[in-house]
Image (cartoon, rainbow, N blue to C red):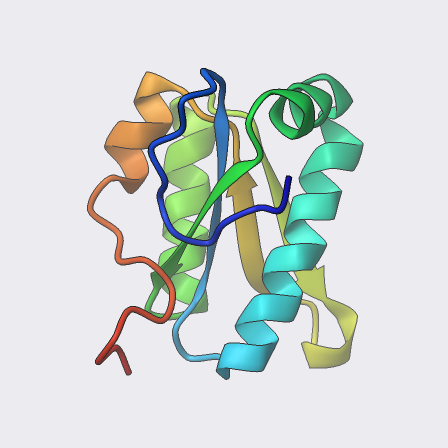
Length: 123
C-alpha cells in the first residue's frame, strides 16, 4: 500500500506518522528530507515504524517556516515526551531539516494547526 502525503480517512484502523519539514526549502528538498527523517524514525523506533507500515501507512507531511521554528517544535516535543526523530543535513552545515513523530494525542495537539506541505497556493 503506498503512503499518502495528505490526510486520508482509512477503513483500516491504525496509526499515522507525522513529518514536519521547512517551507524555506525547495519542494524537492522538502521531499528528500521528509524521506530521510521517515527512515531515521523507523530506524530509531523500529516497533512504531513496523506497526505503522503494517497497519496503515498514513503519513502527514506538514511544514513550519524555517529551522528556528523546527527547533522550537522539537523542544516542545521533548518537553511533552513525544517520540520523534530528527534529520540534519551535513551538506547544509548540519542544519535541522525535518522531524518525524509518532501519533499520540499529544502529537495531534502539538501539530494540529500546522499546514500540510504544498497545499494549493502555498508559497
